[in-house]
Amino acid sequence: MALRLAGLSLAAALLALGCRGEGPTLLPTPLAPMSLVVQSAAFSPGDPIPARYTCDGGDVSPPLSWFGAPKGTVSYVLVMDDPDAPGGGFVHWLLYDLPADLQSLPEGIPVGGQWVRGALQGRNDAGRVGYSGPCPPRGPAHRYRFSLYALDTFLRLGPGASLERLARAMSGHVLAWGQLVGTYARYSSSPFSGPDAQPSAQSGWRCLLRTGPAVTGSCTHLPSGLVMLTR
Image (cartoon, rainbow, N blue to C red):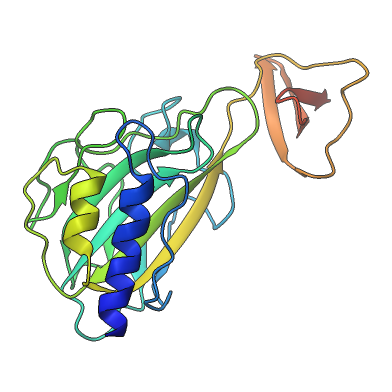
């Protein structure tokens, strides 16, 4: 019964929020335990995602790995989304029917419906079947959530499934889940000065900003979305 409720909770949340072109504003928190540990060799939890994995770089998917799957796991589903996107959210990546003995994904999963060993990719909110990296508007950093779900079955939906179809098929089959969150921001290309150029105690965002071949310094993210450069 608990498994059934977990799956229904998942499907209800996704179906209510997963309208095409907007994506979920909140990913579900199923009643199933959050026992999966999801990690990446490219970035630590809560840290910035390297530009290589975004639209400003190679736009390739990052390496991921996980552990903690419960007994009875048959397959995994991965959903990557941006809850801070304009309009309430944006789905960047759907990957499903990952076999249970798979515990990692290499960098750069090719775009297209079918991957290896029967694993399939869905259609994201950019209209692509496969991965589309972070590409937020200039301003404050966005969060990017890699949510992994352990299921007791294969979904067998075929390539290019939507988030809605994925949610329906997952209903009643979620055994456990886990999540890795990274961030990404696209700042103004030049430093900002003036009365609003004060460090933001709320964001605490620190970074390195290169404004030219010989000008590199530290910068502070401001509520306005601009940056203050300190040589």
